[in-house]
Length: 176
Image (tube, rainbow, N blue to C red; front, side, top):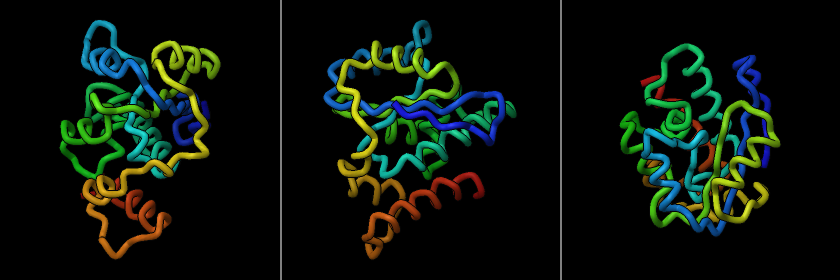
């Protein structure tokens, strides 16, 4: 698990992220995400749609700022993180695209705040999968979906340029 200070929103705590592969309990996780009684305390994102940790940090920081100011577009901080990863203002479409699905085998769990050891323990108990390093993030990316979801120009081929396009699209959603 990696933790990053959330300096833009003092007092909220750090952003904690863990990447899991070979996830076995995806159906249970989806049911808990949709349940009102026993919801998960963290966001779960399709890892093949993330090229760089910066995407996650940008989405989580925006979600934390919106939560602190009482301006969430969605019903929870976790769903707001997923919503902020998308370039569309359609909440349902954003959650469908970037949230976990029945075919998900690798995911990233994200939580804002909390003790790092306790967060890692909670994530590891909840997700039945292999906890892996973020060093390989982006190697399993689904470029076709990224191009479709962010409307990336076909002439843009380098990973750095694709990432810049994605970050720009995420930021522009809130300006339009």
